[in-house]
Length: 180
Image (cartoon, rainbow, N blue to C red; front, side):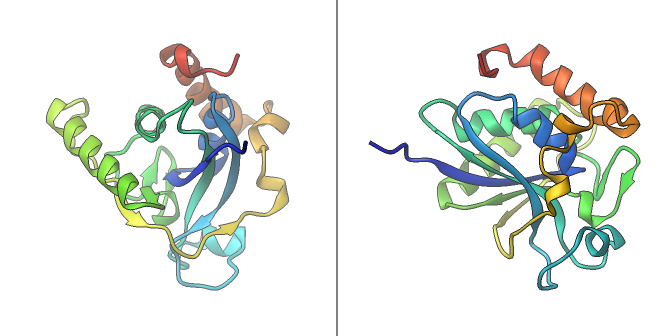
């Protein structure tokens, strides 16, 4: 019997950092870095970095909802990036680094919108959440050298300064969601 995997696509700044976190979560079949919701066919990393393609750096996650729910994925997502800064994550600035949930089903849209409302009501952050909730369109997988980048380049200064703290935060605050 095959597992009924679901897919979601999330943008939370540099895809290396977000991919590294979800690689460690249970119930994840795959995490792939890519580009989504832009307007240029077959974008390249260089073109996306220029900031005029409309694409966001994203991760596309295939997950088993019987092990990890979409809401749990979003709770992790909101915990490991700043959803209150428009088109920016730390020193990474531009629309390609925006915070976004590119949903694949109407149920994902509803869960995302409800969670954002709840989090805003809780006033966890000093500013409101600016995360876009949009349907997925025009997804392209990133170049091979971006896949599993943190796992292969943990000593890279950027990975040490930006990705490693996100992974550590996930490990500390989401013990029940860690792969065994």
